[in-house]
Length: 385
Image (cartoon, rainbow, N blue to C red; front, side):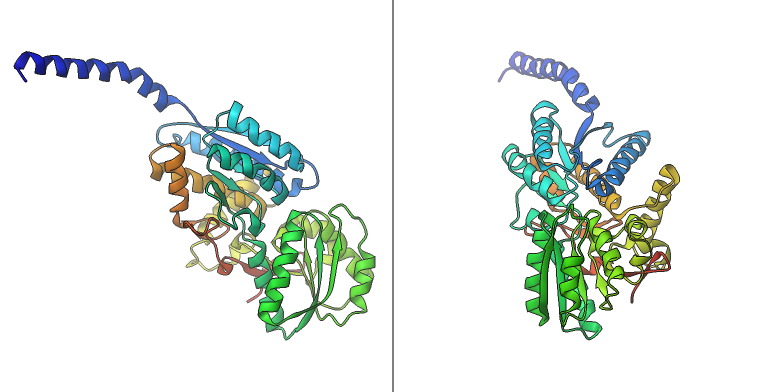
């Protein structure tokens, strides 16, 4: 190649590079669009409302600190009003119309599962804030989740029952997605641990009186009771339990791990045990606990701004957003394939809900050790050691 040809080649390369500069500048200035679907209203608002508040607060915090990789975050959030059909429609809008880079949500198992097919087909990284194992089992390429699974909750509760010498118990589960999955996992876990389910009762998510089911439990040989469900129904069950003067210890799941449950159940909440993230007992954790500082900081930020009690459900949104931000940084941007891989490679991420370690075969990244067993004592949660 002669000198003249070389000069022409270099000049052409320079011209092409200069031509690309405006496009690169636009890409660098383009906000990172994070879609979200939460149940801010409706029966599951106790989940979605603190999640919406958390996402909006922390997006503002991150942007005030300079954004991510020099780009601002743009939160595109929809309220599915606790309706799976609406969640499905919003997933479509986020993907096609809003062209988001990633999705956080939904709040419930039913809404999440309604969104899954579209998310998988479009290839958009998504982090669910719902709990059922079915969300990530079997593993789905683009779907991850933050909450502890129903299987883990069942194991934590049944392990505690065994420690207390109980060998048979009653199970009350709701007919929603979380309750159905939780019932299945509890029955499997009971068989694995050698415990017997002597009453297996179900109720509707919107039922307002569960005394018929509890009356059957009262006359059974059950030594303890586990309620597997979400919404206000478990609080109603607690009050019905008190009205019927049942004596068997009452357990719920992490679906009730919030101060709101205590307020709804009132004095009937006393003595109830449940598995919970560290967040509810953050102030009592030792300084050496890796989750203490992040949990205390989140609680202070949330309660300081909204003047209401912090919620473990909002905590899942906190962890989901910050884990996503961490993955964007490690992926070097928002290329969807690279971002999905970065989320899957997450290891040692400390959240208020646990220390996450994802893998190709585990899109939740937590084990049962991420749960703390807590009991309601004098209107507050205390860790049971």
